[in-house]
Length: 619
Image 1 (cartoon, helix red, strand yellow):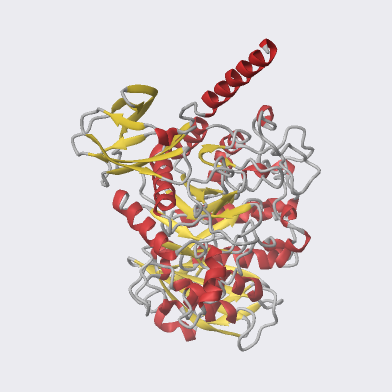
Image 2 (image 1 turned 180 degrees about the horizontal axis):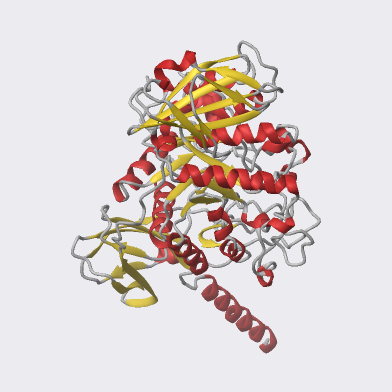
């Protein structure tokens, strides 16, 4: 009997202990982790995450901060605190108390910093910029010590095209002078935030912590230091953000705040990837739902921005990074895939805080009208206003691929460029388009052009001199190749010389082949000239129908004029200029940019075979 009683008492003791542990209350994190005074929007919503935190009553006492509302959700491990920051609130740190009855069970410090009002910050990018797109894991490994970090699932494997290779923030910092020497003025890096997925995590698009730089790339502090270093060198930074989805291993994966935090389906359902249905006036609801609610991939959970808590979480996260790091711009991934009304709300909020800021959206569609729908305008028949400042011009990219490969014809070859540009009337402002020949998701341009250096030079010249702002993928300057058909890893190869022990260092002239040096020197001269000549940044574009394989266009700005000629003939051509008399009126001579040769008269010009020519006109 005594033994039975003892066992009973022990069971009661252990049961009570387990219950106490199960009910233990703590705070594991608060997002955003800090905020700023002086913001134009006074509202701040904190996500508080911790064991059974919903069983407490939060309190705070700080002058100028009002706890306006406490939102309970389905999971007992979350609270959302709606704060109002009054205009007179001062920077400082205060305690948030979490109470049960009269007893404080958890105390958490929260910091309000002073907003940086430096007028040189957050001024965006425009047509004066040329953007260098790099993938940090594949660009340069400046710190091998962080290749494999504790708790990170995907380990470095240089032999795996889809594995992590070890590039990092230090590698970018080590080569900022290289990028600047090329003539670029801004850097867009693919995501650097934590992507702690078990495989294929190198690209960063399956984010598992929106507030943390992946430790295999570096730290938040180091990212901020990199931005500051870039600014000192006259370079801008564009951060890649992803609102449509996050990695399925995000910390909330087994404990969503609400059942509709993700767009849920009875079984896994992919997006149909037909972004056009969002703007299609005849689209079925079935297709629309599968487009915006379907998952991008099995490892990428589709976020439900119709949930206001999700919406606030994403909006505040973007503002946090802009303010924390001093960003100049944002590239938003898969722009049409989230709910479009949310995206418009996000843009309005950003522009309220940062009126001169720029966001360029990835809208991967084939037709100018489809792209134009997403660029801020008042022309959409359904009344939709995106407020999006910039969009990438995919139709022009596809035209470039064809223009320098096809035989010349009525609507083929160089005529492809003319035809796409002739549809610029659909855009509110075509100068706000980002133009490019390739990126991290398609075959490299030198491969597309069948490794033809002359075609490559014409394509680069076109990008540098037509309307819009150019973006170029890392390694384009050294003619890196890669076929999308082989897999993404083959278009995202390591930059030679970026890894300790590399036998070839293409960051130096000595490590490049003669052909690579010819390409590097050509692009560097072209972009550095562009950087210093507003006429090809802001100038009015006038182009002429392609005839006999020759495309001619002009840029004019504040009394300056430039003539650009692309000759696709595989033999020299003497081009008579009488057809262009109106644009040449008042100009008597010219000087070529790349060859630095004078033209004594403008009656005709001798064109080299398969080559571009840029002429600065003189009166």
